[in-house]
Image (cartoon, rainbow, N blue to C red):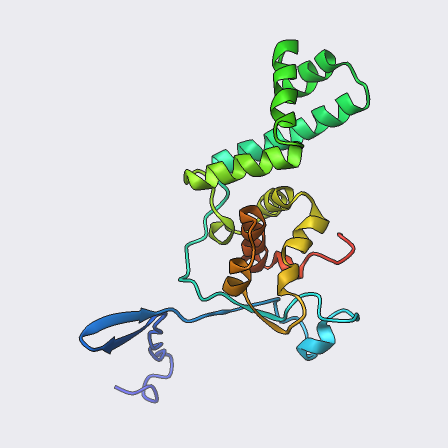
Length: 221
């Protein structure tokens, strides 16, 4: 039976293999292909022409991650709860810094009494500032497996907000990926080994694997 005799019959689509295997010396070795990670192709101009004008390339056109691929999942309930608490605490701290009565602000924004409101301020103060408090909470949650790490998190507007908050702001998020700048092709794993800040590494992983790195404008918009 041929496709010419039956024109409506579709040809079988050959199965594609996602992982390559190689047998050497009686041992089965598994190799992961390093996929190209980069901005979506929306034009026909070369990569260099799509880069903003400047002294050097601010973001690479391609990033390679040699680590085995992982399944991306949505933000966990723990992460969403912590993000909401961060925003509430941010408003609370801003109001108290502008000399609003602590008890009044705590009741309306945090829904807690005066005693608990001062305990919240002491807890934040013990971490230097609210951003440091949030980073510590996130890293503890990641260590316990209750918050997904950067490259394990499925991209979404809330996930973007979560990792931008982890960085401390949009400008700081771009700064986390500064080690990737200056070349058309960057190695994410090599960059991570040179970074001592675990939170910055998680932000950088998310920005690359979600594509956020290529969507954040230099002016922070």
